[in-house]
Amino acid sequence: MQVTAESWDAMSDSEKLALVQSLATRKPAKVGFKVSEKGALSMYGLGRFPVTLYRSQWNTVLSQSEAIKDALTWPGLVDKT
Image (tube, rainbow, N blue to C red; front, side, top):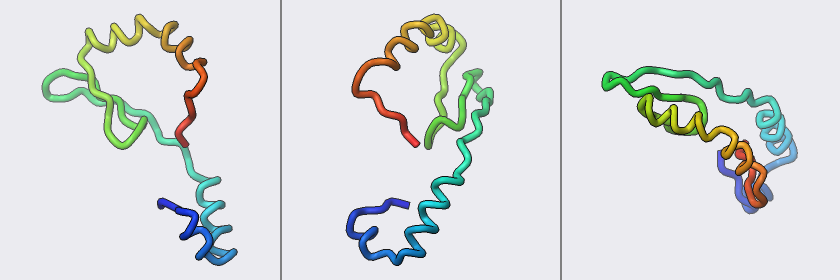
């Protein structure tokens, strides 16, 4: 549910409380994997669409894990919840 300042102001206190409680109890997405018909590996649960890469591409990503961890400390990055 997308909430704007206007829709928030139009909500009753009980609606606001219900929305806040539903967001607080939301479970994180479960990450899962699937091999496609073409032999690529898809990772589900990170966002709206899966991340699909072939073995060599996954190996490239994994070989850069330390660089990725370092990049995650850069200023300006935010967590999506």
